[in-house]
Amino acid sequence: MSVLLLALGAGAVTGLALGALGGGGSVLAVPALIYLLGFTPAAATTASLVVVTVTSATALVGHAREGAVRWRAGAVFAAAGVLPAAVGGAVSRQLPAALLTGAFAVLAAVAALRMLRPAAVRSPARVPARASRVAGAGAGLGAVTGVLGVGGGFLAVPSLVNVVGLRMRAAIGTSLLVITINSLTALAARSGSAADVDWSAVGPFAGAAVLGAWDGRRLAARLSAGTLQRIFAWALLAVAAAMLADAIG
Image 1 (cartoon, one colour):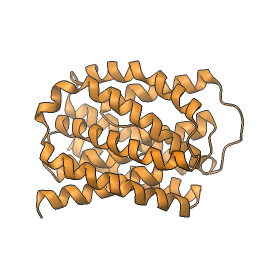
Image 2: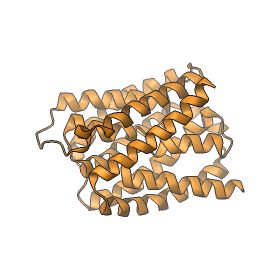
Image 3: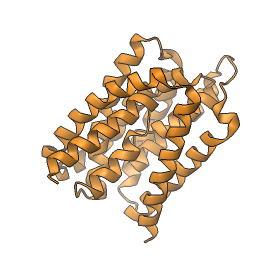
């Protein structure tokens, strides 16, 4: 199969995840870029940030039109993660690739298992979110984004549900705002590695991801919040298992 077809197919799946689930795009993009398109881990994380930034910003527009974005909570959440994301991006250059891959896999598995718990599937109580809790969760997510080179949606969605108190659909829409800001920050910190990226493959990948995000948004409108959350969690577990096996293999 040609590189172009692989890029288009992987990009479409990445966009579908971002549009429907508000995250998981970079979780899928990084393995696809490495194992399907032959990118090095460093180049894959940089390229995935480009893809996820463009796709998240596109999907954000659609969710905003439907009133599914909580701008104030999202802005505070994202702003708290800007500095940690920049610092994490610098630190990540000093860490072994296997360590980063293993840490990413463990983190994804933990997030998935939390979302599979019955309490995580139920809609949270509608209580005002305290700024300190939002900022704390945002700072932690920003650090993870910077170190691991991912948009962080797989952690943003459960954090916005369980910490901030948003309902699932609002968490999905708001996470896209957080992902866009965090990814841009992390990408700026990794600007020195852009020369190693094969942009001829990233372009089709990103284009297919943008189109897939629109289909994902329509899918989100048809499925229940619990169903979306379970799909997201099982997808995360599968990716985490594969990446952990690779890291220790």
